[in-house]
Length: 586
Image (cartoon, rainbow, N blue to C red):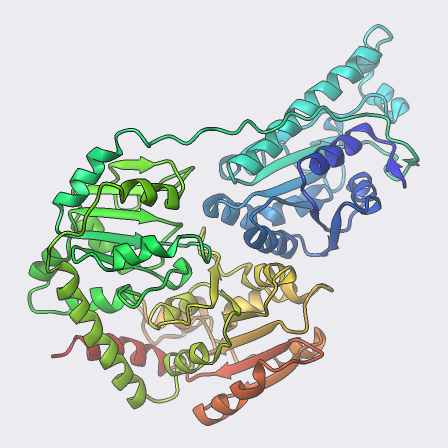
């Protein structure tokens, strides 16, 4: 086995191995050669080669999302590092431990006109859990160091200086990786290397000093009785759940919430929570109130005394607007690490696990007599009946396509949703409880949906389906430029010839400027990309052919598949907005 001759490269890899960071996504380059050598030579690591750094970072994020453990990305110096930023921001707001390791030029070559050189230290600044800026070894490339930084190599301090550098780098690496493991945030490790970069040795010259994680005890158990008293006294309690991994909450707690007359549980597709009494389409409850004759009276009737939230970020803009205008008396959030004050009403953050919280709270709580659930459940049943009637009446469109697609997905699939209109359409329908639903809701960007889905599928025991819009798909087409796509990977592209969501938002108008700069109208299709990346390709543009193609779309195949669904550009917004009018009518 070979090792890089550069001590800091050896240290980085030893620390990753000690902290059990096994998956390493490498974008080819020269400056990061010392890291690439050590990671790829050690059979402990599973190394992936992905050229496009933006895709590589989202691919790594997808793996980390599924394994719930840190995944490292490694790149060369210069602008390569900046391409990681979208995924770093997503990881920061989604609480995903992405470990960014960037090779850098020596500090004396920064801002002097050297190629592939930028100010890499602290480059992610406010979207990172920790930035570790390692020091350059003085025992490597001694002649170059003597030429450019002779003060680093005085005879009196040379040996002690290298030990001091090693001690500093150990400390920084321990801190960064422990943050990734314990706080579940992305971290950045910047490593300056002087040439030569490719020299190897057969035995490491340094041994990392590893500092283990200090496990913290959970708090918030004391005084829970007082919160239980508030819960028991309230006859209007709303539980709202954002992004949440499948099977994260014990069913007995969900059943208890679902059968309490004073509780309504509002979920989203990304919450991965299911019960016949849960409210799975939030906008279908709120929109009819907005359109009613007396919205204030109904909103006051829906306004909770206690709002209990857990999980990540929430998709529905309507529920955010409602809870900001009609604030609860108490808003409690459950999460071990953080609590966003999304509704500007947060009164307490329970820093604990959801199951631990409910296990302790429900020792003191009893169901409360109330008409809160019954009243709003009747509304829910009414809109669900109307939705079926509406679906049976509408023309072929985004909404009708989503209805058929979501009903067609085989059990136990992983479903990755792109952002924008894709994830919002999915909120309108009930999905099979066996499906695992994921979406990059940290920053809600369209930029890495395909890459994330490919990474998330790699270790998945069951097949993966990505549902995406045309703009998101074309934007992240480099997400298919790798050798790690499984034959059971499926993509459905809803192609409405542009950013159809902008036709739904207020302010849209039929002008050339709107079509060009907002909607980004186009006439492209997916066929050539499918051929280029080795996918089986099918296209449909009406309901009968969609139904027919879906029948064998999920069948076993030697290649992954793409189904492109063309929908009418000028019809989709009218049908979606008409849906809310239809379910709001008496």
